[in-house]
Amino acid sequence: MNPSERNAKLAMATQNDPRWASVVARDVTAGSKFYYSVKTTGVYCRPSCAARLARPENVQFHATCKDAEQAGFRPCKRCKPDQPSMAEQNAATIATVCRLIEQSDEVPSLSKLAAHAKMSVFHFHRVFKSITGLTPSDYAVANRSKRVRAKLDKSNSVTEAIYDAGFNSNGRFYATSNEVLGMTPSNFRAGGANADIHFAIGECSLGSILIAKSERGVCAILMGDDPTQLVQDLQDRFPRANLIGGDREFEGLVAKVVGFIEKPAFGLDLPLDIRGTAFQQRVWKALQEIPRGETRTYSGLAAELGSPSATRAVAGACAAADPARMPPTCDSSNLLTPAR
Image (cartoon, rainbow, N blue to C red; front, side):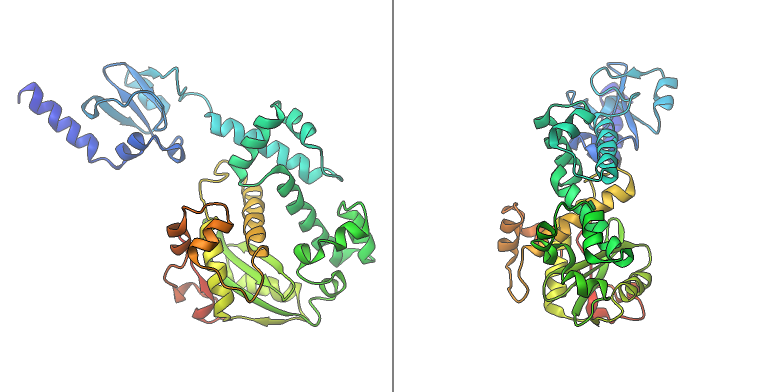
């Protein structure tokens, strides 16, 4: 076999390897799943390395940094595969900021959060949103809202719950109570008394998801591994409400929104609870912006969610239902399956 034939064979083997597509695309989500080396330079890189693309016949794949180094290659000085990636470093920093927000009685200022992250305010705000899909303020709202929902069940009064959750005044809370609770605080505290609650169940990248909405707004977004348990959790949370499944209008709307919001790469390196909180808030915000009873086209919804060019992504949210995933308390018409 002459050299050109040998190179052509090596190139074909590399190009037929599914990992090569990640290298060509400089796929950030490939992370540290594998590494590749280039025999002409003697270095090994991450799949996302921004260096000039190597000729496929010169490429080898390695499972770990150690494997690449044992094969005689040294780490690339550009992508530094033997060190945590910048994405991983940023995710770790943002995770500490999220913990600070969660543990603070009052929402820290943007400048304080940026100082905690050791970044400029502008850079911090951009990095936070790129990783979580939310602004720091939106993440703080999500945590404060979650806190008040938990406090309403345990506090001696609605007022006590409001202040314990970090709201500075009753008026500020009541101005947003429909957005936070989907009903009046007293009805929420009374287990959803006098409320009709429509709900839909499906799957997302974080597991099963249940979304419930009253006439006033979204009142619950629950996630977990077991759809049946999510239904039970909803019943436990609102024992005096009329729970309604099978509302096709609501299910269709939820499927579109969740499928569009679904971006598995968001927060991939964040702890699961932080990633889940961010995902819930993105869905919550999108659903709250669409009044019940109104319809949306795929293009209209994409535009309202800030990505007018993503019409096909929104349409892909309405994937075929899988009745096998349904809990016994629901019928198959209550399933939504977001696009992955």
